[in-house]
Each structure stands twice: as C-alpha cells, then as structure tokens.
Picture 1 (cartoon, rainbow, N blue to C red):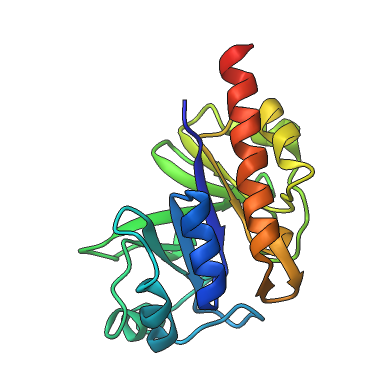
Picture 2: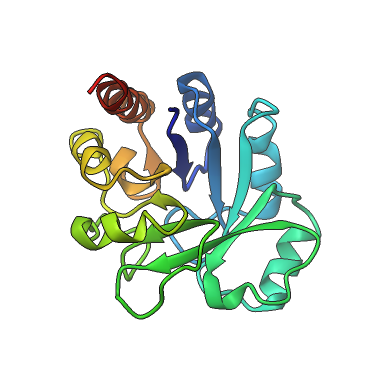
Length: 197
C-alpha cells in the first residue's frame, strides 16, 4: 500500500524541491484566480525542478475551454484538474475530475479528487460522507488537510491518496518546505500503521 500524495498550489522553486525530496507523486499548478496562481511560463520553469515520475497537474476551478487551451499552448501537464462538469470535450490529455462535498454529484468510478465546496480555504470535508465516496473509486481526499490531521483522516476514510495546499503554507500562497516534509511524513506514518494493523 502506497498512498498517492499531491501538493497543490506550488508557486516557487523552493517548494517544488521540497515536494520532490519528500517523495510526492504529483504537484499542482494553479491557473485560476488565487494567491497560488501561476502563469504557464512560471509553471514551466518550476516544473523543471521535478523528477520525471512526478505528475504535473494543471489546476483550474470552473474553466472555459479557452482558459484551458491558453495554458496548454505554453505548458503541457500530465493531468488537467477541474470541476467534473467542466471537463467535457477535453481530448488528448488525462483529466482529474473534482467532486465536491456538497452531496449533489457522486463520481461513477475511476480516479477523482474529493474536496470541500470551495477550493483552497482549508476547510475539512465531512469525513463520514468521504468514507462512503472513497469506496466508489480511486479517491484523492482534499480540503483542510494538515500535518496534524492527515493521519486521522487517512485512517477514517481510507482514500487512494491525499492532496494538500493551504495546510502546508506559512501564509496564503507561500509554501513552507518544513510543513511539506511533515505532511508527507505523517501520510507515510499513517500508511505504515494501516499496513501493520
């Protein structure tokens, strides 16, 4: 068992290096209006810090097709992440659909991200509801996770993976390398406890 770990909202080289050295599986570059927003040129530069096996995720909220195309003209990610109902018609690149903790839509399977009604605000999802959604497919749990609570969330929900953004920041949009390392260590600790349980 090895939980998938994604650090979202990477916006500088120092954070990218910390994520890679911690052994994460993916990093997210935010292209929507946010304290974490980067340009395609900045994402391309920072992505140069990443090991080849680390997935590069272009993160949007509710983009128009033109918004995605503008980014893809300059930056080629491994995945495009956005709300599930905005990804229709995306061809030629893998997608990571986002389903929100509002009870309105349920994923039908596959790999998906599950988070709160609003991205990037550090609000924990309803773990009871998340536990049932996790049985549907490869759920990446997001929303309000931090080094001090991710272990408990993993034990309760048993997700395929976890995603963090504000929970590893010293201030909005500024990642703390020490918190990134602590978060990944907490994930691996929870993973080990589950394996040995």
